[in-house]
Amino acid sequence: TAKFGRGIYATRNLNPGDIIAIEEALLKAVSIQGEQPAKNYNYCCHCVKTNMLNLTPCTKSASLMFCSPSCREIAYKKMPNLSNIFTKPGTNNFDKLYADIEEILGSRDEVLKFIKEFDYKNSKVTIFDFDLSQPDYHKNLLKCFLTFTNIDDIANPRYLKDIKSIIESREGSNKEMSDFMKHVAGVFDFNAFTPTSASFSTTFGGLLNHSC
Image 1 (cartoon, rainbow, N blue to C red):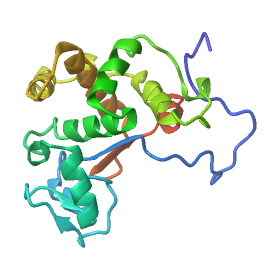
Image 2: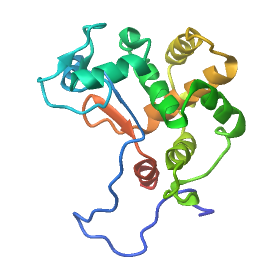
Image 3: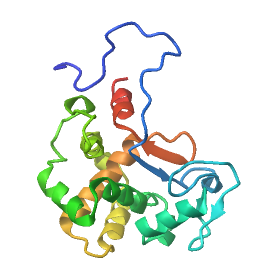
Image 4: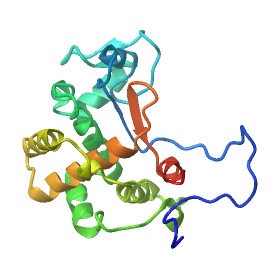
């Protein structure tokens, strides 16, 4: 609305316990930030599922665990810098976020094409602007995610500098990719749900959270 901005408004009274939506996370990552960094050993680095301490260790980093050997092999292919994901607090989600985005869009070239074609800094689209029955609905969900509030204005400058250095260290990185992934990391950190040591973002849930 003109007064309150974007949000979700109920059209009928809701009772405690009513299920409003069931939504799969669009982007997800394990975080070791916080008072109990050892909790990341409870979560699969790739799918972020947990089966408590019955996890398969990573052969590249002592900080990472997987729910199964197959999930581990998928992660190795998707995240070439896997062993460096948890080296710096505050930047540990970057490679996982990029891997998820590249999987959604199909390739690095498609990511670069998306950056040029979609005005992610100024768009105001929401989940209600798209037909999610179409095959490219994940791409449209990504567009919605990118319009959420960015942490750039309140983040520690060192945090943003660390993200920038990691992005620029990637093979084939350029300013457009650097700016885009800094935006992604900022939106994710500000909007992701983090019930424990696993963080995940949803487009409907994020919009609902903005409606409080």
